[in-house]
Image (cartoon, rainbow, N blue to C red; front, side):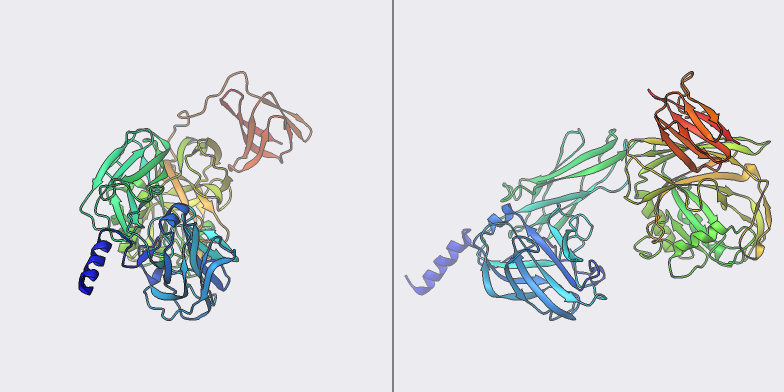
Length: 626
């Protein structure tokens, strides 16, 4: 045989599926780099990121030789950098070497190993750390879908934390290996199902798969099941999914009449017409919450305006245009604050300008659900409503956000005495956060005629904030428990005028016309330190003159309600009950008692007592303490 023949024979053997000639790039990133997405974790100079290769994947790589790392560090101002392979983050590394970023350009840079390292088939982490000034954001993630827990890691304030489900994607770091046989390995990432799903309505879900193997993927089958429904199989063909790349897919529209938290399972099979080399990550299960079909979801728009604001009429027009045709999905409240005070200004409205953040106040401005829209601002939920594109973006963005809670309002008022009772039912479907939760109840008024710059002397001011009706400026703290409905009772009296109490117009009396007034209630997070952490989840509105208190009132069991006795300053509840909530006339919770805590003290005043009775039912009574 000639030398040429020998070479041809060797090439033929390699082409038949032996050890791959080309290097294999291993990692979970799809290679997306964006300098705007660089991050840092914590406040220490040491920063780091790593990924985990589990036992099944490590077995596929057994015997391979690690030749180099590829990674992206956004700055060259690094004091020390270390590449590592380790069995345990924070433990003694299996391999490490120093490296110095040579470029901060938006690309992955390859760093050759000083001595080749052979993988032993056991699970491992690989990554890097850098020490850099605290003003730098050196770490890069690819912004792909979340992975299963335990894949993506970051170094924060002296410890490694799992950031797999935090929305960063996976770290932009890879290894190049020699000696890896050809294999297909398609992994499914959890479905992004954090939107607003309603039972009985078609829902469209999107997902992502990732090619961890070193062979291109041209076809596969997707199987999806939600709750107890039969699985649906979709064949995906004609793709060209290269190694180390992700593929986004959209599942067929899905409708279910089930409510609550349902499991959504998505799996892949028949990869390139055969079984996958590693099947442990061929499926992913996500939790999807389906709200009942009668859920009422409202988005709260708070407008900052002023009579002396010449651009405010245009801002109002932008808002009206953005929600035209879908007005019933929004509740608008106008605070005469942020600009110069005027005859409609209340001190509480100026307190809410804290939500602007540190950038100063202005008008016209708006915020939707007190939540920052990342494409508009990440530091404040407030933005200029003269920006029509921003208003339209916000209006559409919040339509798909979960409400987490349901609100129902029941009201009864005596127009002659201007006294009434409001019941607010808060039903918790999903607890939205670990923050403090509050219930706010506000009074609004339409049809207030007055001067408006660029609007004339007879401009009609609508949705004008007329004060709080429960708790303090920031509301009453409440507890949210999944699956439970809690009723809050507010006894109120509407004054004949609301008096301006801020600025040069202090003392101005504005008549209250009952037929032009509404009550708005909303549930939100509360933070005293961060304007971007006071998110509103759901809101409700009812006309003040609506008389519907008989509707939805919980059952009162006759003959079993406890009663009250007085012994000097001591008060006693006589009878059986599970819990008694005692509210002031303004709706603040004054005391909450369990059975066995029958004796209590209250200062003089008018109270409403709601008792939860054994076996179900409630009793509501007024209590006057003299």
